[in-house]
Length: 181
Image (cartoon, rainbow, N blue to C red; front, side):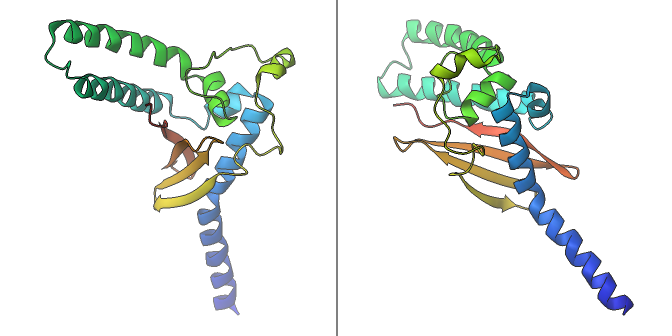
């Protein structure tokens, strides 16, 4: 009898451990839907997300310069230095609870982000069919400590939210933006 109880408890713990990223995604979606910045902030590693987005944008700028054969141009180097500073400032202002909430709800990364949480801005937001903003997203484990949520837009762009285990909970540690053409 004790073995059955021990197996039941062990099975319950394993099931809970497997379910925790799904629970975290629901909590993130719920916080974004309610515009609860404090609850949303508790599920995001902002320094990690900011660094990731800065790297992606800088890489995109560098790739564009290479494609246009401007990599060795003196003015392109100056422009790249200025762009880097602008990217840092831009990402610092956009990677916030309000900005992440907009991304989760389907707006593009560099659309105007407001910190106003009042309901009078509803005309500017995408319509939500359901309460869960990730209801149409695919979710999967990438490893024991990494979980990926892929949200596909109507035009086929994919926005990826990478969650990493943080103790017993999960936090968004990376957001992979769609490729900019």
